[in-house]
Length: 66
Image (cartoon, rainbow, N blue to C red; front, side):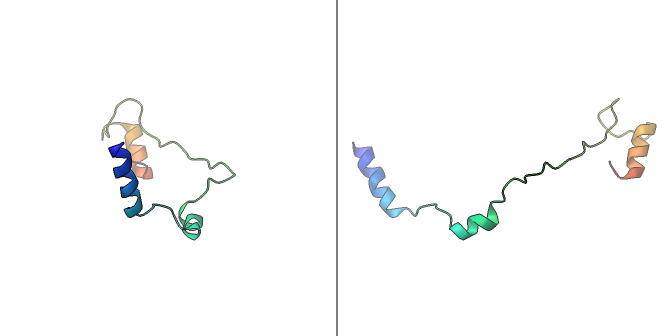
């Protein structure tokens, strides 16, 4: 009962966290109706890190992927 009263009094003095209706339009972007295709990043499948002796890693490095 005491916690209920204390929380009620705190509720009177703490500001509410409601957003302005106009800010919601600009800040919260809705999901697009058309799905966006994102390519998976290319990486060498034989090891975890870049190796200068691996031809696949060298090709990816020259292409600017790595």
